[in-house]
Image 1 (tube, rainbow, N blue to C red):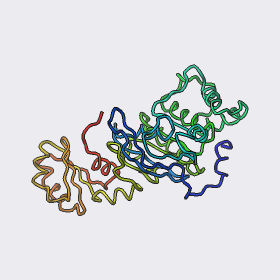
Image 2: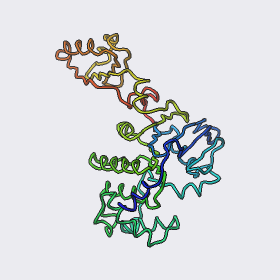
Image 3: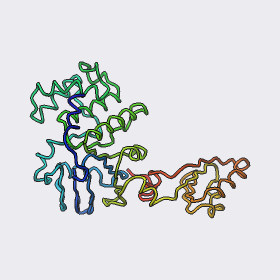
Amino acid sequence: MAALSAASARPVTLTDTALQVSGLYKAYDGQAVVAGVDFAVPTASCFGLLGPNGAGKTTTLRCCLGLTRPDAGEIVLGGHPVPAGAQAARRRVGVVPQFDNLDPDFTCSENLLVYGRYFGIADATIRSRIPALLDFAGLSGKASAPIPSLSGGMKRRLTLARALVNDPDIVFLDEPTTGLDPQARHLIWDRLKRLMAQGKTLILTTHFMDEAERLCDQLAILDHGRVMAEGAPRALIAGHIEPQVIEVFGDDVGRWAASHHDLGERLEVAGDTAFFYCREPAPLLAALADEATNSGLRYVHRAASLEDVFLKLTGRDLRD
């Protein structure tokens, strides 16, 4: 881990800002895709950018990386203004794209070597980093393995290792665990926590709300190109949602829920599920205990989560 742990020796000031976005605006054909977005990412933290499909996340990230020119607003990435200083900024940035784009004609180590050359790093330096990078990704012994022989989880971990070949200060991760099984997801989470412990800054997009709750120090929820809410995950849950949720399932649940709506502070019905949001769940639980057997209803009682906040702010309608 020598090549990766070297970053931890650099002094880190948590009040420093790795990414500052102010008044970001971008439109296509007169339609605003990003409509005045503001957020700041402290150094050595994980910041989540959440939102349904079409919310403006990808355009925001592309603007931050200097890949798309905004129509208005200011971006400072790693101390460099973007897009004017995007090339200098990207030298200290790693990117894990949403879809793996490893070269299938190269082995694992060759993918890392070729990618490192894009940063002007000497081959000898890259080769010295490869063992630690593969070990970090749980791919020790796979240096000579061809890409087609790897599982989906292995490819995803190699893509993460590749993003670290230039020892970046800031890492952008676009849905890094999509399509992975639980074991692979937990391994990725562990590796991302290690990076934060080394002082690296992570900027994460994900559709997994439990992932955002586990990893993010702060996050912003986007919809229709605007920030709907921003803050720490637990603070957002406490500020936007009643603390207890009871999900009731079954045939004709809508009629049953309507006749018991006064047992919760708020009720939402989606398909065959009624969501009761409660501060005091005991009356509803008592009603369910009395009637569930006869009515055929089933229910789950749980604490409110970030997903509840997300759905309240962005709605339950399907997005394409």
